Image (tube, rainbow over all chains, first blue to last red; front, side, top):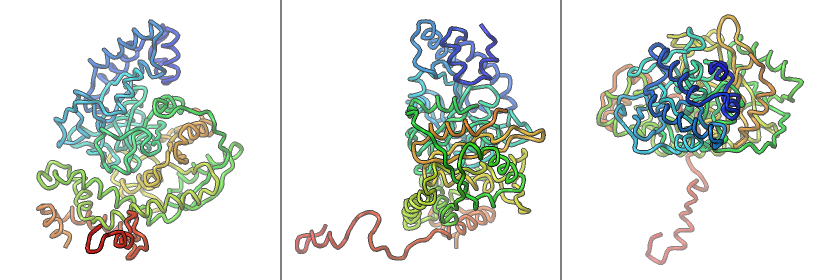
Length: 442
Length: 60
């Protein structure tokens, strides 16, 4: 047997091949992840609940299937972590809140159920921003998630624990959720690949919502190959993608800082021989952002209405004002936002004018330092939440798939700049194929 | 105004800090166009057709 750590660093596809060939046992791999979690998690706080006993049992069952040639697919025996908004039978599901601290679901949500059906080993429930309502994963009840890859930077949020678990080797992949960037932001600041799939591709049933019609469930991992394997239970790769034309929304780039624009320019120059790039403008950005925010605030306030009335003090102070604002939005404005949304998606499709997707930096600046409350962009201090969400919400409002990946290797001063590629509905495998061509190996 | 609305809806007394954030958020929503009149409601419900279908003196 080769060293387990050597395999794990190669990602899910390599590990799965090694299991197939009898060179690695799922139980050895799982033990390594559990041991790394045991050693690091006092400092990283990636998990709210670790699940070593059930993980060991699942891994031993996977060992047996591997020994007898009955593997259930490439995820069989692969240690994965899931954000603590996904319901897990018999294991508490807190959504990073005090309100749900003792909530133990009776059933797995469909995403967890499907992962177990294909043999994945669930190693734990990951830490997050309370009720997924923030970008730092600085959780008042379960601790602030640290970034194992770049310790001086925030881990991002709201799926910060999922990113930290993968970056710290405590899982080979993780599931997060994304309502305004909560998969892509932590993936970017931890140097990972994060995919917010088409709305509804991974079902949100049994997932504690932030805002139903904007919530997306999706994977984070170290490579596009790993992401491809993680979405395969829901979307098989048809193999039919040969995308050559991408759009760049020039107006968005004006909202990024100078270093990020320079990094993106270098990226564009490097990929120019590989794809044709066309400049576009995203339509009606101000109105579309207002529509996204209206829907977000109203839907989350509706979900939390009873708690707001009965026990508002049990909701964290940093998210309470958002829920209060949402409670003041009437049906007329909410419906206006949903109507505008449909029209805006049509305009977005027209703006692409035949391009297969659009590219821009994932974040408007370098990943923020731990403890930062804002980002300085073009001489202006922008509150952290507003800055990090700035490029994210269009993919939540449209429901289109969006992939964040490192656009160049990390420099000596910090994490890599990441780029986001947004495509048409159900083009996930195509996006991963293009991104593999555009990305460079670190 | 915002404080009294929150009080009326939720029975909650918001702090000054919370009210400042709420005001900022509500201000950010003002870019959303809210049409005063629409020729066809997005629900697909057509009140004229409903009246025509209804029996005399009845309701749809």
